[in-house]
Image (cartoon, rainbow, N blue to C red; front, side):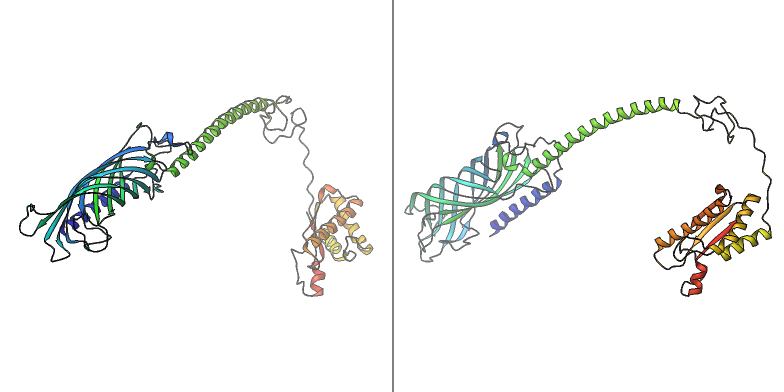
Length: 453
């Protein structure tokens, strides 16, 4: 039992150590040496490998426990090796060999004369399938851990010896027989990548012998089994430049393929950028040459190539040749009087339009004529601001207010007013001076305001 605990502790320690190694594995770059172009065939991989191992042989198995012909299993050392051909990422065929001793005491039948057996396995050879459960690591480019299962069939040659209860030495009268039997090995294990082409192999194998005579004692109606727990090293054969197929991560290669394509595209874009930069420099040179032909150094609005009076002071009005115009005589200032404002107010009060139109009603002309006379005589400026109530859509009201202001402007111009001194603007329903909820309020909001200055 103590030896079983030691065995379990050894396997657990191996798994923990391998897990730490896995955690410390650095992420490789896209240009890793392990890169193989996807779908490029097995010739680009190392597919042959050999392995050597050693471990413990015991009649105790995880499938049968101590319910054997002998109740007390003893652990003995064994050793072996194999040669493997990897066919796919997850499937390999291997030829296995091992030998050693299997031993147990305390027969199940208390009346049996022999209390101990020892079986010498002269050789055990088999062909088995090695199935890798997972060789894709989604966190790293390389697959460090490779859990696997094996199953196969082969031939075993062994001899059994029985010992009596009087002495630990072999009784000359004890039975000793040689056998050749078919057996089925079923196992599971974990491979840990130590270096490119070198793996630590931790495995456990149950061997189902097609006979009940492995312990030299036929008891019950079931065949004998025994286990082989082992640790060893696997060495990949072939060129070191090629990755091992069983450890290769195909997803990583597809990612690398993508990154290489992306890099090629990036280089193409950088090359195009360089060409664009050259075109931009050529364009800047051309613009600089054009600028010399379109420069107005003194900012007078006349290009240097046509400016006959360069360096004109800022703000000076010039003619087409860039020379200063004569200084105009300052106009006589005219002030708006109270009488002028009364004329404007009366025009506003009398101003009416046809319903929903910009047509000025005839009785408004008399007061508008006086406003026109005022603009002509005193050269005043006038701002006309049209407004409406909120009846109808905002868009319609805005257009109507603008049309009415323009209608007043057109009438004043027709009476001799200077059109450049009259500004007509429409505000629609946005600036009411009374509530639109009453008829009186809406009447006040339908207006054109005159601002004289």
